[in-house]
Amino acid sequence: MHRVKFLPHTADIRMKVEADSLEEIFKGAFEGMRKLIKRKTGAEYNSKEYAERIDIESGDVTTLLVDFLNKVLSLSQINKIVYTDVEILNLSNNRIVADIKGCQTNSWDEDIKAVTYHEAAVLKSDNQKWETNLIFDI
Amino acid sequence: MKKEDLKKINDYLWEIPVSYRSDMKVPAQIFAKEAMIETLLTDRSLDQLVNVSTLPGIVKAAMVMPDVHEGYGFPIGGVAATEWPGGVICPGGIGYDINCGVRLLLTHLSHIDIAANIESLTRELFSQIPTGTGRGGEIKLSNEEMDEVLKLGAKWALQNGYATNEDLTLIESNGSMSNADPSAVSQDAKKRGYDQLGTLGAGNHFLEVDRVETIFDKTKAQVFGLYENQIVVLIHTGSRGLGHQVATDYLREIMNIMPKYNIHTADRELASVPFNSPEGQSYFNAMAAAANFAWCNRQMISFAVRHAFQKEIKINGEDIKLLYDVAHNIAKIEEHEVNGSLKKLIVHRKGATRAFGPLSSEIPEKYRSTGQPVLIPGSMGSASFVLAGTDKSMMTSFGSTCHGAGRRLSRTAAKKQIGGKALRDQLFKEQGILVRAGSLRGISEEAPFAYKDIDTVVDTVHEAGIALKVARLKPLAVIKG
Image 1 (cartoon, chains in turn red, purple):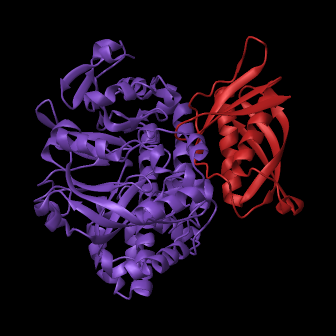
Image 2 (cartoon, rainbow over the protein chains, first blue to last red):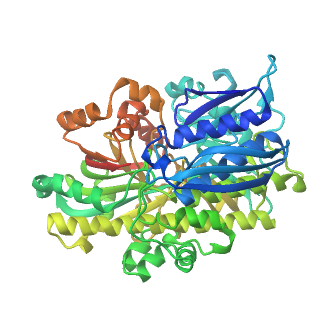
């Protein structure tokens, strides 16, 4: 399970993700970013689905999460698709392989420039939940 | 950090000495009036400035302008120069929106000349210039065309009939950095930008039809071609998705490769490599390509502006001239005096505008008596300013000054205070400002009260002598995403 909260930020968007597992942190962050890109689902989600496989490596799990989200963002903007589903096939502290699926759209609710590394720190809290902040530059 | 950690140098300059933290290589300097200091201490911008002062090869001081606020790595409003060629280049010192910048177009019209047609003009501008999220332009660049735009910048617009020769002489770097290398730009970046040439984007990017409300310096205004009640057009936008992707790509690459050069920074977003390393050169050349895309973008928007005026106001569009176009997120190789001798430096400006003084050979000949025009956009509904660069800025701030006002309220807080429709109606009723936007949400998020006071910021740089006021502009119409 995961929980996503949007917290105050003066210029951009701050999101906090809490989850029971590392995999759920990635899923929660993916879903949180999707809500920024397109808040509500509409008729387009009944149309043809498009899929992509993401396979990336990074130095540590925090940069891996940011890099994964940036890849999803790039694909979303390039293909004009809102990715709504993610299936994580392989996840370690340094690599993620995931399939993402979504439908075409002709507009976004938020024009995200990038997912930043600012405040990002994937860690286990005292109550054994995984958590991190993420800041989106808009 | 507390106010006691800052040393007052003069009424407009404060310093955090190197003794504040053991890893500082140079002092951190803040251009601000005393009344601003408490506000500056409410976010992490000055802590970020201290982090910048630790960058390998940094010289003289890490600096921030009076509109400083917290950013990613570098604070926004930050200026830092590193030694060429072995000092670092830091993508965080430029930002994600490479060559976000401003240009000002001048007409020969006065307010009274367009009053009857301002609504149709605004409608035409909104129709011709794509704004908002996900809205591409009419031009879809092929791979070959994209590489040409990246290499040539505004020159591509000239070659394809969207610019005049005179336009190019009035853009920083003549609208084209010669080291741009399209092969250093990823395919993802090119794909993100292929349909974005001639588009404004969203957020705080805008196009305004302004009236020159006040002339502060008649001599400089005359050289610039400004007069009271003149109609001018201000354009604020950058390199769009292409530039954002270049920044993302290289921040990731440089973060991973940094240990090879034994570089460790206090903040991931300050990831840096030596300028003369292969990775440093690759980033600088990709940054230049993205900067060229932005200059071409603003040139294409200018073409649309000329067209809209021609159609709705029945003037010759080519009579609309460019005053200047200047970046506020960029790195440039420049010579500045350090400890009594001229040094070649890599000057990073992130949310800071170049403000070269008179006689500088880098600025157009027609401005060598006045100093380079400096364009400071206000927030939607508030004033914008034209200033002139000075010799003092060359001596004290690497030829740099502020870039705008900076937010003081979050978008959520702004939306809670007023809805988009109510604000749009209020701006028209109380100030006669027409607003056309891609979304009502976009209007309320950019409410004037969400930003700091631009007059205070501009007065500070004027009194500090790092740019001098020439004119104040007030909006008549705003187009945004």
